[in-house]
Image 1: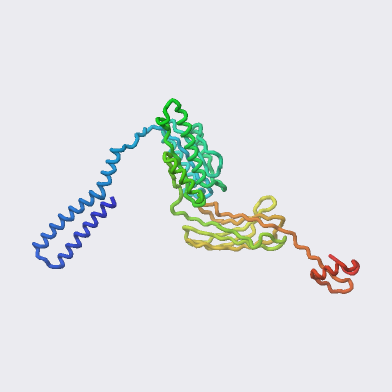
Image 2: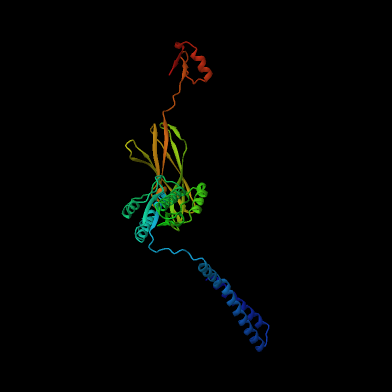
Length: 380
């Protein structure tokens, strides 16, 4: 269609351009009418020829190929062996109109499952598991497993889970063909259409680029498995999150102060003020607020915030930084930290009992004093 519009636009541009040029030359009416008639005829023939070459010819070639080598007929009611693979990383928590991205994927999967032909088989896989993907005994079990899926903090690369789904299809097809013992090897046919559906928000962190070549090789080796990637991500996301957290020291003496610095990132929002709250986790597991810090973020610009904390108790202190304002993606609104609390360092002081002035001693002085008589010096 775009090609057709391009040809017509070029013809009209040529026609009006030449007519304007001839009119500027102040030709006679007869000459101008003659040239206009010839121009219309020539452009009309050229447009017809270009349309035939650019639009009609590809369809003719396609029709000729289909007649000479028709595609094998596929029954519309042939059962499907489908794997529904879900990205369950935390980015699938992104909420829009009251539904997370994972909820959106589950809704699409359940709706499509109801349209599958009878005797179809379903396997359900998720990214947060290393367990083998298996076909469910019935559709009721498959639906129940899909509905129970939730985002998890730990997940396997989608490359590996997709390869596991391909391996399942290859093994299941092999069993199906081996069951046809009475049929010659060359005449055996698969009884299922093989499909894999991957529901993901296309987050870059869910993939491992180092394994891309292995996945490509599997896809090329198994061309009879149709793989569909269903993008359930948000086209224009908006989010504010804590992307990094740093401690001024990893270990401090008991009673010392500690400064916690955090980096914030923003995407798709106007400049506004957010509040970051620092809390320590008490011995009873409850949060003890330590302070709040306002910070301005917006557009594509990030920000940094520093919050001091004192009165740390050992031997280990856990805490968190939290964005108090809510947004569609809660996974990066909280960052946790741990700091080691050591007892205050002990300082050994030495002084002479014969003098009233006490002083600190160097290492050399200490060696000399340890050789002196005990009653000459006091040690604390």
